[in-house]
Image (tube, rainbow, N blue to C red; front, side, top):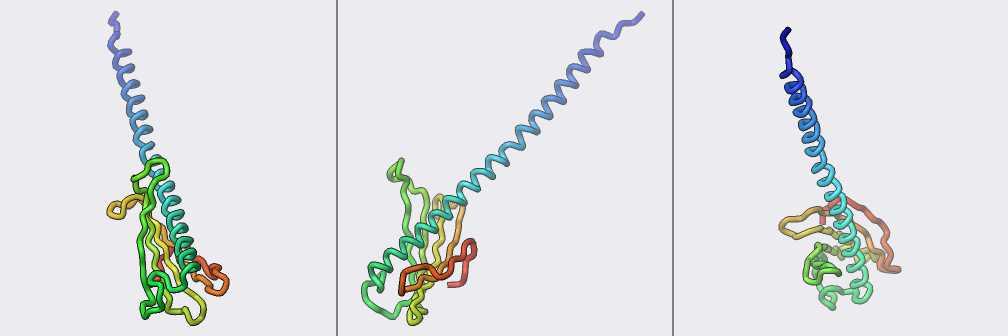
Length: 153
């Protein structure tokens, strides 16, 4: 009578190999989920930066109707960029917003504003988000508001 003692060892090794392969596949699927959640957080951050840019332009225009020069000149389209720093870590740049203002429809009491929020550094952004709006100069309210599209300016 022949005993087959090595059969159980081979089965145990195959079962261990199967468990390891399934475990590695499960662990490999997780980084994609983490990357997706980080991308979603960066998109929200970029959107909030774009909103901050629109509000910044609105406040500056409400204080000085000829912003940025202070005098009524021929320039109708201009842009500016501002960096936002972390409140918890002073000196660390969280992101930037770029605001473009078009005063070509000023005769109809409308100014066209485009704000692009960039989460992260300008050279290596984690996310970008664009908001365009028309500002009514009579009551300083936004007439139209479009998010996510970059209109020609």
